[in-house]
Amino acid sequence: MARALELGSDSAVLRSHPHLSFGSGAYVYEIARAGDKSVYSVSDGSNKISEPIVYTFGQGNAGQTYVIFHDGSYYESRVSFYREIGGLDLTLGSRDMAPASLNEALGRKMSHNDARDCFGCHATGAVGGSQLQLYKLVPGIRCEACHGSGERHVAAMRSGSVEAKQIFNPGILSGDLLSQEFCGSCHRSVDEVFAMPQRGEINNLRFQPYRIFKSKCYQDDRRISCIACHDPHAELISNPAFYDSKCLSCHLSSRKPKRESSAKTIPETAERKPGGCTVEVRNCVTCHMPKIELPGAHFKFSDHWIRIVRPNEPVPY
Ligand code: HEC
Ligand code: HEC
Ligand code: HEC
Ligand code: HEC
Ligand code: HEC
Ligand code: HEC
Image 1 (cartoon, rainbow, N blue to C red):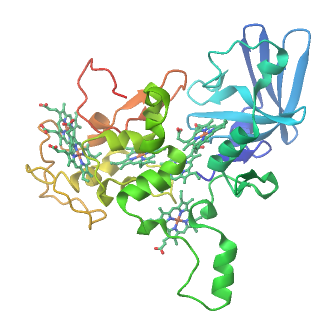
Image 2 (spheres, rainbow, N blue to C red):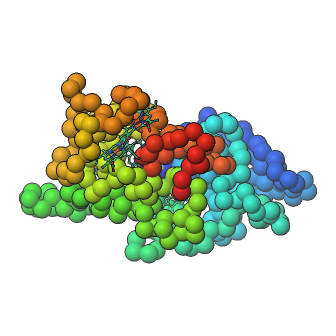
Image 3 (cartoon, rainbow, N blue to C red):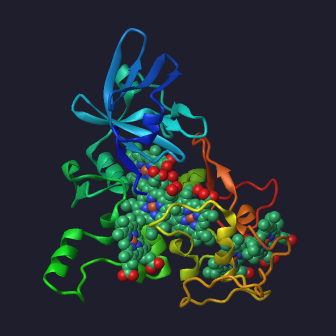
């Protein structure tokens, strides 16, 4: 998450792709590296707008969208980079809009509230109260985004008040508060998704707190909270076998899993059998959390709605 936002000058994606281009209707897009900058431009054949990329959003695992400054406003680029295709395509959300002018083809002009929301979820320190304060922005999700201000911690430690460390430890939250309120404040909680028209339809595939809430496994239990499977301080683990012990901490025997909120994770042992699964004893997530492509995203999200997947059944939302 530390790379959820970068400066245009630092972006690994932009440095390793010094020239990108894409055509959509009458418009031609280009992103070209010049020194330590990447310049984003759009042309309609007779006129052209070019601006340096100020910020990149997304480490580019799925995609990366650009923010440029033009005519006194920030714009979200109309095209984004997608790793799967190694190039540009329309940004999700701009796919259904036909731009009426070169300015509109550049991208979506961000209102103050848009900018505040985007920077609030992708960077640290960019929002104070309800105001955008980009001069304080630290790129990406840093320690302080989750643990509170380091200044207060340093002051407390200097003053010798070791008991009051002044660090918020999210580890004290219950399973529900942690998954829905804490991680869900950026990844979208079940309440937030319920407030969306049609719950965001299939787009809610990327809202893991909502998806996992919908699975029969989900209870206010630490063994199914986000941090049972993810360490927010480490890289995402792609080896499916890693997650088996997480499933088996509940699916121990042929009995139905019982509610038990004290244990965080119970390591797998040889005697434990995956209760109920008549099909396989390992790599549970490959079948029960399948990777599903979100239209236009060029990325397969892991479905956190843990369930029995039957062939030809539509993906629920
Ligand atoms: C301040 C907002 C914020 C909070 C709070 C937050 N996340 Fe994230 N998280 C993000 C953003 C933004 C990304 C996308 C980063 C990217 O791909 O560039 C992300 C990405 C991730 C990823 C994928 C990482 C990868 O390498 O693909 C995981 C896993 C994750 N978050 C888990 C968590 C968990 C667990 C919590 C709660 C303990 C949490 N997040 C809280 C904003 C947040
Ligand atoms: C409510 C918090 C929130 C807001 C607001 C938000 N994002 Fe995100 N964004 C996330 C999280 C969490 C992820 C990672 C999970 C995912 O991919 O859906 C993410 C993922 C992304 C990705 C893909 C990252 C990757 O690794 O491929 C891009 C690009 C992105 N956001 C751009 C934006 C832009 C541009 C805006 C503003 C128009 C914005 N986001 C607003 C939370 C947010
Ligand atoms: C996305 C949110 C997030 C970010 C970013 C984050 N942490 Fe954490 N941190 C957590 C959560 C959640 C826990 C509780 C984990 C648990 O209980 O298993 C935690 C626990 C900790 C603990 C143990 C606290 C205790 O008293 O037991 C330390 C130390 C820590 N984090 C340091 C850091 C540092 C240093 C950084 C920056 C490099 C950082 N964290 C970034 C979410 C985050
Ligand atoms: C916190 C405990 C817990 C964890 C962790 C957990 N489950 Fe479950 N799971 C349950 C409970 C409870 C049920 C509902 C049982 C019932 O009603 O019969 C369930 C039901 C299921 C079902 C049946 C769903 C259906 O639609 O009938 C599947 C499949 C499943 N779990 C797979 C998994 C997999 C795979 C993992 C790991 C990725 C996992 N579970 C992790 C508690 C858990
Ligand atoms: C039972 C285990 C489990 C739990 C609990 C869990 N995840 Fe995941 N998550 C996974 C797996 C497996 C992947 C796919 C890893 C891979 O293959 O790269 C994943 C991937 C992700 C990704 C990357 C995007 C994607 O779809 O690949 C994000 C973001 C994420 N999880 C966020 C969360 C959040 C937020 C929570 C809490 C609401 C959560 N996860 C709870 C198992 C879990
Ligand atoms: C190869 C795909 C596959 C793998 C891997 C797999 N399962 Fe399953 N699982 C299924 C299918 C298919 C069903 C439905 C079986 C049926 O209805 O006869 C199922 C059923 C279940 C059920 C519900 C049983 C019931 O009738 O209530 C649970 C719980 C479950 N699996 C857990 C797990 C766990 C835990 C793992 C890993 C240790 C796992 N599964 C690995 C395919 C798989």
